[in-house]
Amino acid sequence: MTPFCDRCGHPAADPGHERCARGRELEPPRYCPECARRMVVQVTPVGWVARCSRHGELTSS
Image (tube, rainbow, N blue to C red):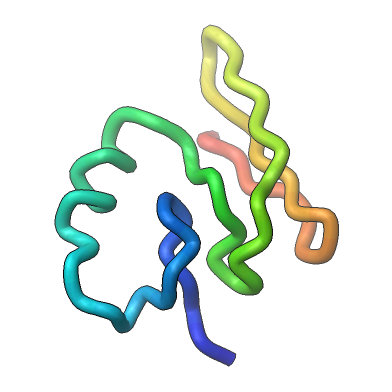
């Protein structure tokens, strides 16, 4: 299985993800790193929760 970028949804092995890495320092993931599906993201004052319909939850804590 190919891992995907959790910010843009493209394969992580593709070149040009430096901008994504910098952006992820400030915001939660938007795409599932396992299947590249768009995730439902909830941001709270203490962190974030991102949910993939197939692979479950990722949290900031």
